Length: 239
Ligand code: IPE
Ligand code: IPE
Ligand code: MG
Image (cartoon, rainbow, N blue to C red; front, side, top):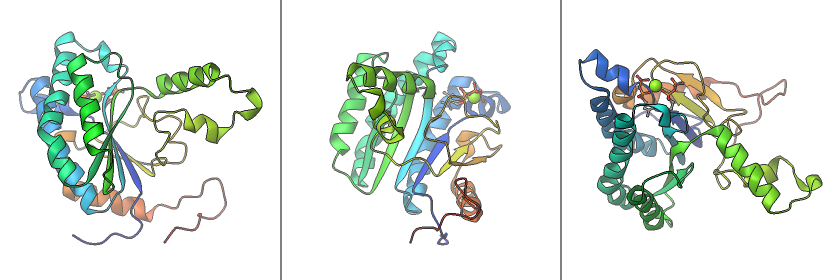
């Protein structure tokens, strides 16, 4: 594996295209989600090898509840299966698991599986993997706003740092690179606040086919980008 200069600290992925991947093969959308879920472990491993410290995976949006009941149930079920199959393996690799989004609408067993995975892996330091499930950027901002009001924070104390500390991502750095598979050029309510200065990379590859070579391609592209953060010249790179 070639060593790439300037690896992003935090990569976030919109894992899209499971349905179209399946349709191309004459399979059901559910089979597409199964193939997509099976791809997750290999992608995590690959980013871990590249020494990416934070990886966020968008698995289910607040809007995805509007899909047919059967598909929603299936998506809930395969996340639970994935957690029971993969958590221990990820733990052994020193990976810390976190959840971004709402837990209150998830079935009790899934909620428990998420809590158990977070508890088991909480002291790991090799890499942090955030599963965004029942996640919506707007819902996150509204939730933060409500908690700020509930805590009685005076308006003059509200600033960007304080607001960030009320988001689901409170202890996480902003994503440096957002990758979207499946070819769409939109954010679909993902990390709206945190993506202010993220680099964006969209590939037509459907999520179940997204693997090592493409990951390398995305990282090389990222390394060539000039991040200016509003200045005239790129900000000095760390390291
Ligand atoms: C991504 O694949 C998975 C989820 C959004 C849950 P899709 O199911 O959106 O696949 P396409 O976009 O229909 O191909
Ligand atoms: C975004 O994909 C959400 C996830 C990948 C979980 P969608 O398939 O839901 O996005 P739209 O509807 O095409 O914008
Ligand atoms: Mg989609």
